[in-house]
Length: 134
Image 1 (spheres, rainbow, N blue to C red):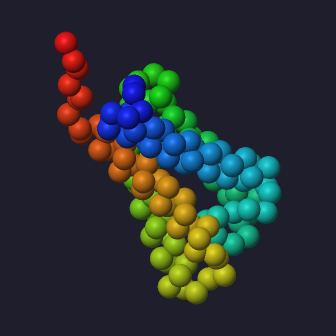
Image 2 (image 1 turned 90 degrees about the vertical axis):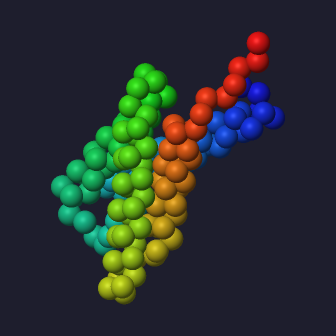
Image 3 (image 1 turned 60 degrees about the vertical axis):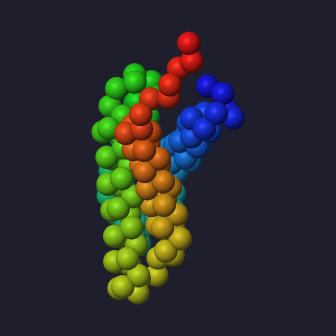
């Protein structure tokens, strides 16, 4: 990979957005598993709901990261990232319409990161392979 050939820059962008998305998921998962007062999806969850949410986020982080370790499952990771981004976007709109006391940036920012990763990774999956020089 050469950083100044178009494809190398694109791969770097995908990896950086992937790191940001997984870092958000791991941070949120650990805060939910240890019941820290940072729950982005709503207000004052019950202990069991917060811990199950943390376990689910750990599962999402694993699904998103598996293609980087085993080179299989990239389409699944892209679909999971896109679905998560859309779900967070819809949840943010719902909170906004109901005028809940949830800061929209805590939902819109991870949704944007998830959608950016999903779209960039999808573009990488559907792109024609770069020609190799002989």
